[in-house]
Length: 261
Image (cartoon, rainbow, N blue to C red; front, top):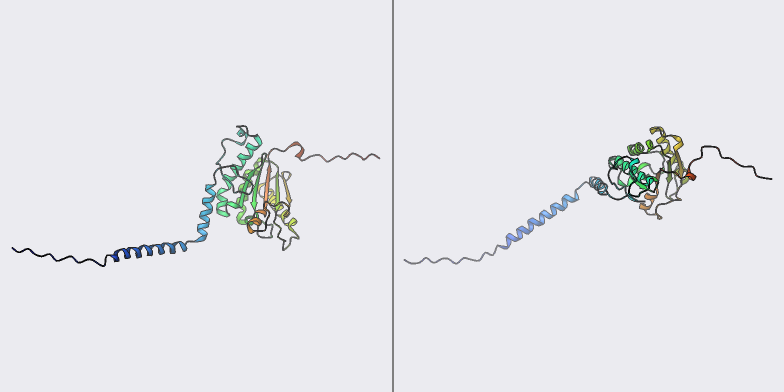
């Protein structure tokens, strides 16, 4: 029998189309992803980023000009704190800082942002810094209604302590426009507004409250950038925990000795 002759297999010159098609498919997928990213709602992304940024800061003790840093709720009551060589006043201040931060966290995330409130400890006092951009309209001293839950949460921790609370208003060096003649009046009015709200809405004893305006004389940072101005425009609530004898308010009227002739 004669053997059948096999036809020679011809070379496939179209195999490059497979690789080309794969490349086109990958390129198309890449552009689809890029288009999807460009369509993301920026406001939702910023809100999510703020929440993540807030949640990630969960260690340390905080500092001037920094975001609130959470350590979780304190163990025991404030009176139980103070072990490990830490002065009792500072231990109490740290405990109060944690309690305030834990209480205001959900309100700040919903109503403002992580930079709206900063809490720091200075040995025997706790300072709660309120960013003016979140609590007041530009050039105004009235509290924004939507931010009041944050101030209420702070008051719920601070007022029951019945300790002296000093409220200080600060501005930047931008000249005022409107009913306030200068930044002295604006800063003092904002501090007085916070004091009035604490007394009216939370029953704080007037004898424990004081309001002061410093205008632009005590900036956190020196500069004219928008970031610097935002930091300098603020109201600070200073809670005194362990007053030194010389700093206590005198309850009796001052006495003046007659000048000898």
